[in-house]
Length: 167
Image (tube, rainbow, N blue to C red):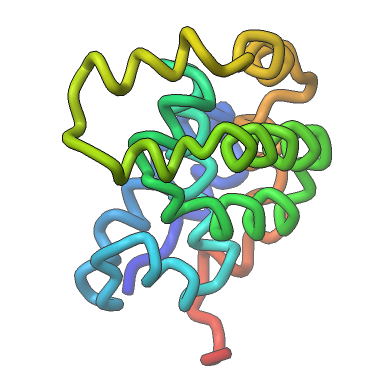
């Protein structure tokens, strides 16, 4: 298993640090046997948070919470919530919990399972579900998720730069 470069941990800008750490995680996935979202629940939240927070951020910033829930089919919900709590992303935890409640209230996952994954079925959710306010709140949240994750990495550098005993 590979680990993060201590020099990059100390000196890189947040974005560059996270890219480096995600590259390390991606390179280790085959070695540790992670092939699906459920497998991430078996590994340390320190490492899975690199995946789950990036997945949340990339999906929500591209198409909002509707896109996140629709594309992940709800499979990442528990993982994302666990990892957001683990890294101390309190604002994002609160927003994510409210988004999850909307997802449940409007049965987004049930709608996703009821038929083919078409553009028309996907975009219907933007017309019938009140995502805009929550998406905007997420986009404007300070601190953003990237600096929170980078701070977590730096504060816990030993977990990312050297082998850890088995859990």
